[in-house]
Amino acid sequence: MANEIATEGRLSKRNLWGYSMGGVGRDMVYALVNAQLFTCALLTKGLSAANMLTMSLIIIVCRIFDACNDPLMGAIIEITRTKWGKFKPWIMIGCVTNVAVVLAMFLAPLSGDNYVIFFIFAYLLWGITFTMNDISYWGMMPSLTSNEKDRNNISTLSNITAGIGNVSVTLLFPILAYGDLAIGNSAQTGSIVMSIFFCVMFVACQLMTCFVVKENPLPTKAINAPKPSLKKMIKVLFKNDQLLWTALTMLLYNPGGAILTSSMLSIFLYIRFGYQGMLVTIFVVLSGLSAGAMVFYPLIAKKYTRKQISTVSVILVVVSYTIMLFIGLFAKTNVTLFGYNIVFYIMAISGLGASLGQTMFYMVQTVSMQNCVEYNEWKTGERAEGSIFSLRPFMAKMSSAIVQGIVSLTFFALAITDVTQKISDIENEATLGTITAEEKSFEIANILSTVPESTSKWLIVVLTVAPMLFVVSGLIVYLTKFKLTEKTYAQICKEIEERKVQENTEEETTSDDIVTEDNPTKENID
Image (tube, rainbow, N blue to C red; front, side, top):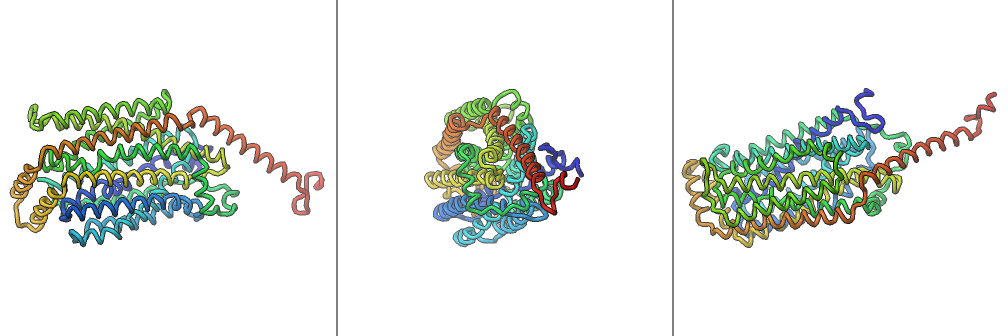
């Protein structure tokens, strides 16, 4: 068993792969709800403009509420003491309960006002249950190793597997739910089948993490120590200045990455290029190729500093979005070459460039947040992984609320529900079998042909300009406020180790100096 557990701060292959593979299924379900549920509701639940705004408001409020619960969940994890560790119980509890809620949201045979009322309670429960899993899963990562090389490796692999899970949803869901290839010729049927599949994957992958990963046992001193109070653990977050700056950077970065994968992209592509889920899949597949860059992050990090990587990454983001904006505004949709729509593919390749830059910037932020654990230990004497990593999903959820607000206001201003309601009516007829697949395609094509050209142009403006502003703002904060460089981090780790050696020496000296009948000195024995 010795080779299965990370020793001397190093990471075993068992832990590396057992932990990372758990991210595939969990990010499938996160992407399913975060990126597909709202679009699915618009195209299948007959939502009016008022329904859409109400649903958006529910999402925003619940995400803010859920984000505020993240530090609390992190603190709860810190005081958890079980034979299974402090992370694994919450990983599985959150997983199983979350799956039940997700299935209910996709399988509920409701529409319009009734679905919105049901959604109020369902979405709140989804956020609470996913938080249990999310905070414990990411909080486990820094507890597995403090070695800089291993940190880069596990961050890289876990983000790759999470990316695989995320991309898998966007690759499969649109194809099998919308357009000519929809399962059962119906968005309702396709979405139900796919939601069941992704939920099964979630449970399977999290079981793998819980039964494969071997946590380093808590030191006896930590086990016997009094459990920290929730108030004390929350205070940890506000004493760690570098953590707060990293969190702010993530808060600004996350909307930049999320807008391009939001329901706005699907609606834009359907209006501009036709109602085919394959379009979304191709766009995402090309953009998803950026995940491959994660493999090279450890090599890049050896040669360049994190701030250098961040700067180049954001420059790539700005250039790519600028190209996409220009093409979206001025190029004609029907330009083809060898039967391929050139305008669409130029935009998709530009999306690849933007995603590549955002991926590398995100990798930097992930490693930076992990390093805040040692910074906290150096500054306060406590690692507090659960509390510190609770800020990662906290910022993701706050950013998600921002994105939802941007998307819903844009849809409302452009009267998108006038289009989606009509499509939903056609989808319902297809589900009942009252129209054929050919009739369905013809009717939806007629609906889209009536949408003004200005609608797609405004959508592309929001899809590109907003992400650029967010990502550039995040870079400015990171470059000017984050001081925990590679050199500084190495020095901090060195001082922590020196302290531990000194403390152990002092404890041994104190133990030798105590003279009692139960603990005699060597001289007394003689």
